[in-house]
Image: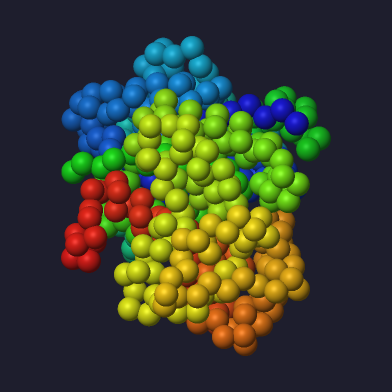
Length: 239
Length: 239
């Protein structure tokens, strides 16, 4: 069974990378080790903070991201993905720096929503302030029949707090903040909560909002498995 | 803060690699992403089955392991570890094939036991038949004051069954088989259960045997963090 190698530019944060790998394994049809998707993972968390860089207009993260990309090329990766939404601010420049294909996380989400019968809805974007500011999801997802709503400032603060709490290992606090944010977004008409930060699925796990969430990491994992196994859209529907 | 890059030759199986990475993160003193240990991970599960190869005297896994080692060298790794006990049958040849240091999982366990006040005890080895047969733990751990006991055949069969059940995702069955094996080993005088297969901590999680277990993956994770942070034994005690 042929499997193409997926290169993971990760470590932002390290737990999010582990969570992404776990999801790749979970969505792979496999009966033994050898059926699983081969991954080469560069999980080097010494990349300067992405949200800070976006807020200050700094380019600090780029050289570290490029070094990771080069390491993955050397290690035999055939596709590059980044399980960090905020790092996608540097996606275009990274894509222009390599002959390999980079798969954009927002495109993976769009592919996933397009396959769902109720994927055309009012979608609330839950992400870091940096990701919201880059506009990657607003551009990739908005259509004639689909609306992408960004949170008001106080809700954005709660989302940022929930993300920081997960990074600090304070899951109770993360639950409370993420739930309060989700509450307001639903009250304002959101039908789908797009969890576009790798820490947010952890913050909302086990809450009543889980059922209406779309996990961007999960969408990226599905897209990687499809690439690695050489599935086109039709194969995927049959699988 | 300086952090050296740890190269992980993984994918055997893929969940065990993820479990190892999670343990590295858990044992790292960190307040933000950048404090964490940088990892380059080659998780390519297409390595031929190790236990089968050992049983039949085949060398099939070696070329795949060597390819992974080369990829990790290229990607900048400064130390190589394998979160797969059975693959250590090829440790010496891999170590002879590179200028990088390979850290042996049984040495990491010995270091950990040597630091514990009650580390000199009667230790039962719970592992694949392949790992038991290689003798890596018997050689690394046995001393004047420490005994390593290998399981009788029926108990070894139960351990093998528990490992297979975890790989197949049947955790209930894994619990039952691992508990029945642990029961016999304790009855025969074991004071510590050495879980020397990456699936076994999952099989014994939440059971009454957890408290007397020594998890080889956890020991390897601790040793990697110490290497990456440049700690010597004294720093570690102070940390």
